[in-house]
Image (tube, rainbow, N blue to C red; front, side, top):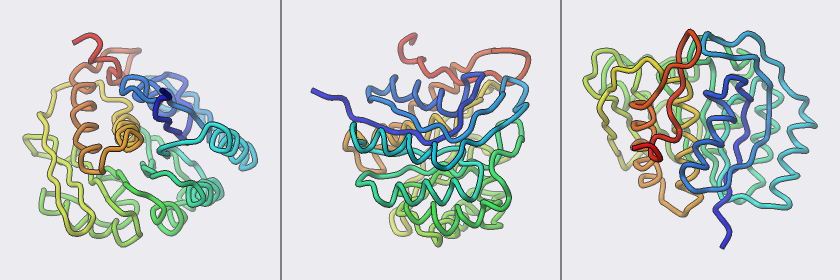
Length: 264
């Protein structure tokens, strides 16, 4: 019996806390076979991103075709895409692949370092989001993409409506950065059904890789045949445990623990 296969299209994090490295660890922990298309290489550690170099479009396209044409995929997850040209290329590749795509519209790193050119935002809106089965923006990314600023739980609905206008089938607005909220609350909606997901807010600063981990966990659930609400609920539970177990690494913000279930 072959494992469900999930392809991450994202940047490499040399520190191992986020990006493709976090994606593959998540996929392994959730029982799917993870594969990767590297879009950019970063020099990155617990203190921030010291450098980033995007790969040529032809290298990204060749990696994608190599995996999809031979091995096949049940879900695709996107992360750091760096430039408008890469965003457009990846959107085109996804549109020709018979598998759901989870789009994490990565704009900045956990440390505030830019990971997407400002000129690429319009390509994300017009090319990438329309091919997404699920889009997973955090509050900063919502503001970047739509101009909507979220200050309360009620604003999450307004944010979701604004993102859905760009065409994803579902959107998960991640409210983990919502100031003053007792719980980490997210809103999943397709414009009609609403699913509010709440989890305890853990007092742990070591949260590097949360967005990558959540999106990869959702893609893993979809690859296993779960519906979107079920895949998101399972992913939320997984990332909540990973945040609780986040650990010190280096002198800055450490990563979430992708293997927390093995040590529970």
